[in-house]
Image (cartoon, rainbow, N blue to C red):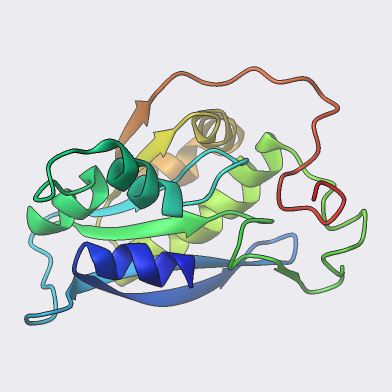
Length: 193
C-alpha cells in the first residue's frame, strides 16, 4: 500500500488501529510502533495524533516531506517525534483511504459523503482521542493538525470543550486554514474521480 511504501522507506513500522465514530464511520489510525530494524518503540513522552486536511490523507506527512527534501537523512516531523520518545498515531478521517466504511452506508452512496468539517471534529477526532487516551493510560495526549484539519479540531473542541480539556494537553495548528467553496466534492468520493 502507499502508506506501507512511504513508512517503510523511512524505516518505521506501524500497526493499523480501527475506531468507530458515534455516527457509524470506521476510521483507521496508523500507530508508529518503532523502527523496522530494532526493538519495539517504548514511548517516554506524550501520545500525539497527527491529522491532515480533509482533501488529503496522512501519507502526505511522509510523501510531501520525502518529495521536497534534499537531505536523505532527514525525517518527517511526526516520525522525528517518535525518535524523541512520543507515541504517534496518524488519523485517516472518514472518506480517506483506509477509512471508507460505514455501518449503514455504502461508499458510493450520497449519504456516506454527506458530512462537513464540523462532523469530523465532533465525531472522528473524539473517537480517535478516546482510543489514544485509553492506550496512553488516561494520560493527556497532544494533537498535531494542518490545513483545514485545524477547522475540524476547533469545531470539535468548541462542541465539547470538557471532553478535550480532560484528554488533550497541547494542540499545534500548523499551516493556515483553507477557504473553499461549498460545492467542492470530496476527493475520495467515487463521484469526484
